[in-house]
Image 1 (spheres, rainbow, N blue to C red):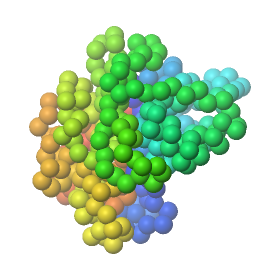
Image 2 (image 1 turned 180 degrees about the horizontal axis):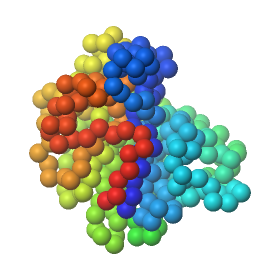
Image 3 (image 1 turned 180 degrees about the vertical axis):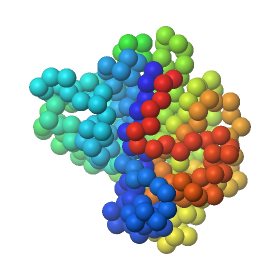
Image 4 (image 1 turned 30 degrees about the horizontal axis):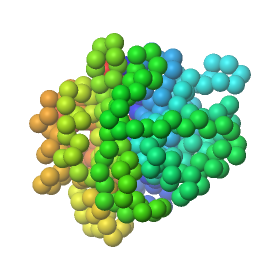
Length: 296
């Protein structure tokens, strides 16, 4: 199975258009080594012919153009088979509207995600006014074949993050995906948003690669910088550092590749020369960058 990290940043990208934090300043003026990043999305394929997108970011057009495997092979066509959604967040779904020129869009998502996109944001109804939308219900803990020996199993990712639309108490608001190449038995777990790793630890067992939430370095990062009034966990993301942080929990796990993505522009691991980046790498973790390719 092949994976391509199309975008590795959290919502807003890196730099974020209205942010002057140290990282955003550095990527703009070149004062420290770092690379710009678009908003989080991953492409996966069993054969490099048919590709599935894990989330559709607002940067999807630029991401498709940057990856020749996703370029059309006819006057009108695409090797993109479908989009699998982990949640209904705007930075993971706005890209669906940019796919409206196609002959239709296949979308996989839970009932909670469908309800939010249809009745909350209205995004699904808007997209349906432009092209056919073929909705594929995602049921956690069910093994589902995709194509060419590729299959997925979604799993619920509990969150107490306040829902902007609806009551937000139902299961399925956030899911992770375990993608498996049935020919080799090797799996990848895609988990770009997780508030607490404890309930999902068993889903990581035996996987060869983990793409995991790296939004904030510290729990109080946004508060300390004066950019928000909520902690990382209150925003639905386990921090990397500190007691109970993801670095402490994930570094000991026997997973071949453990890669942070969905990284907020304030996170110092985006700076190649930061002590936080060195700590991550010393513990056997990697930091995703746009264009990273993996063969699992």
